[in-house]
Length: 173
Image (cartoon, rainbow, N blue to C red; front, side, top):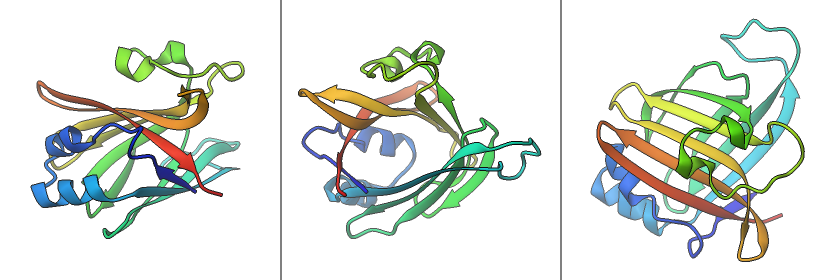
């Protein structure tokens, strides 16, 4: 389980505003401690894929103290899948393994530790089906004040609006 480190993370407020999240919910999210429980495993792909073999799956339960939780089931095969939850509404998302060289956005590309060969980062891209925004995240590890930390670089965009922020997490065993 990982909890967002509020002191080291950037504010998500500008991104939540672009996503059309109301003022009171944005303030609640800003005050809440966000915790993610991550389960990673290898298994056959989920629909709509018909591919043979196994892919990495990452199931996440995300909770914010005092607010409802959300669940995400990701298959890292880069195929778009529908998802719906109370906060973001109806979205279509896709996830895949990437290398730093695969990332074209300069903000999303910065800060990653080189850990092994090939594709060691995760790219998550979501398109809102209701509100026209996109959210792209890169997940991996960065050096934060001399410590290896799990981080997410995030860009949320809609039209000419753009928000960039980083979440830094503490590991809580």
